[in-house]
Length: 420
Ligand code: GLY
Figure 1: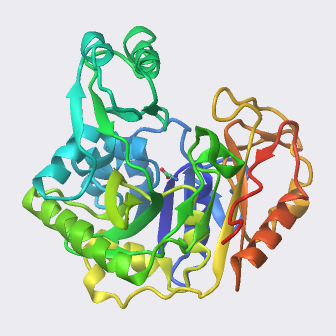
Figure 2 (figure 1 turned 180 degrees about the horizontal axis):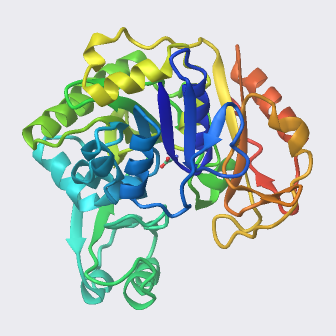
């Protein structure tokens, strides 16, 4: 079996590596990938970097690709999964119509409202006047731009000035593009976040092991939000009672909703949950695997990932036994370029990578090659993970590996998994 993973981050590295470990896998390609991930059996697909969906579909046909995994939400929103399916490829990733669960926050809210899925109440505004005129005595509030915004479209507003600042970005600076603009104003919900990720084939949702993501840039949850600075799996906050409540009050209505709305869904579904006073609420849906959660979760997967992905794409998840998991805990630490998440710099030489590269749990996200040197590409550069009987031991191994690597301005949190 030959497989293709689309995307360029550490999540795609982890997925392609695990696919390559399957006894069923003959070859695994990644596109566009990044310079640091073409190892672990992963091959570069012979495609231009900006290949469109039709070109990728042709590549799959010419190379007898039987399984394609579409990693990022941008590609899912642009219809890559639709095109690959039309070309007869077995695809993990929903079509663009179902991807609206992530690409439109309003679509997701309406879906949740219709099927009784618990989430924070919201209001919708479309103009500068409506947004800046929005006065409410209670802060904080959550402002969400309705559309993909590379993780920068959600802010927690603590004052009227924060609302004006967000309005400036949307309406005056056009940071998220041209009008029409839709903004959701939501009640702020405090609590503990859990990333509940599963494989869904439209009929059946098979939960993977849980993870907790560390979203803020600095230790102790300080500083701005990022794509994710590290993860621990399983989540220390998910009890079996809570899992049962999530399955009953959230997962079951989602599956019912997908069927009722006739939204074909064959892919990973990431339910971002807030556990508030013991009760799970949905913060957001992501129609893909999480990054960095996937790296931490897959380290613990003992079943064959290809079997799971194949059944997801074919609508046969119910025929599979539940996936097997290592009892070990995993810790995954992300290292970023200077300036991330604002304006990260790139082009800095990465020291110590060559000797650590073959460490089996190093995943490459923003690594470039310049001549014989490895250099940073900006943003999240790489991550190092480990699993062990305790979180403390896994932490020690991961941080020790990371200490061999460095570049100018390298940043990572020092508290991933601390105190668990
Ligand atoms: N770690 C959060 C995400 O993948 O969106």
